[in-house]
Image 1 (spheres, rainbow, N blue to C red):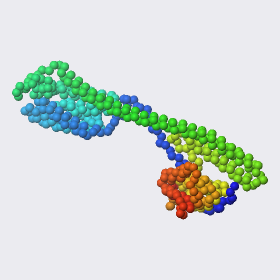
Image 2: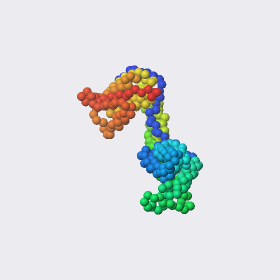
Image 3: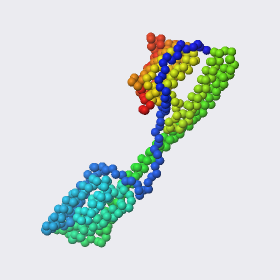
Image 4: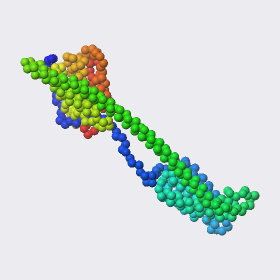
Length: 448
């Protein structure tokens, strides 16, 4: 075995408390939701596109003013008739403006438009458009009671219009009667079924349009839900496959490394027992046995992480900046020539992610030095605090390129540093005589 190390760590790390867990958590899937019954389904309250209402408004206004013009009030010679005609014309132009609020206050807009249509001869055009919007977005008894009110208003409006004796005083007779000759109005007699048919046609168009829009909206919503369900199913399937692969890897690692580490531990114990006459050999055998036992503990911890379900935060081994002395002393006990200086201000305040990253980087630097530069002295400096972050500087004589594949440890360190927003540099220094690795990590407290 090699001789004693060149030196031990020269400065302790302040702090006692340790907390560690840098394992990333996964966002949980959306919780299951039980759909409400159709009758109690909440209605969407978003406003309709303004351009659609802007199209409905002039159509309803023109239809209302036209209905008022055919009511006979505008041709009357009495003052109250002219006043009522002016009020009706104002209502015919003003009531359609309520359509801008038909989705925010659907019942109020529909009932107000229906009530005005009963009182004034402006027709139920606005009420029918508002009813279509109500049916498209709401469910339940109130919708159909409101539809009944609009039906009554439409029946009153059509019947009032049909009472006009000729085409000059009835819009319905103008539409259904023969073409007038010259300026003289034409007397028209409507069949009994015309008024009910006109009311049924108007209500059928309004309710049917509302139901059609509702069906289209529900179909789009169902398509979106199906897309979300497919994405969720794919994600869960991917997670299941990954979990099964993780469990398979855990079994393989346990069977292979666990068996070999247990044999190493057994043989090291046997050597230590039989080497009573050689204290140095006994000490080395006991160190190997101790390291094998600790490796078994680390292996069990890693296997527990692999077997944790995806989306949960596994319990990582507790690591702290105060543990740096231990990992350096373990390397020094193997006879590797290590000279180290560790000085950290406020180590007990360091967050778990920072503590874990610094510990693993130092551990990897020591491992790389033993593997790629065996027997060469390693100089390791770790310093910093809340004001400056953590600086890590490791250097050892360069003995040439490593045999076989390499670089995994450096890539792992680079990933850890990048995740914490730090900087890592490595390469040859002193005209190619020294291999040097430097890292800087921003300070992170345990409170985040």
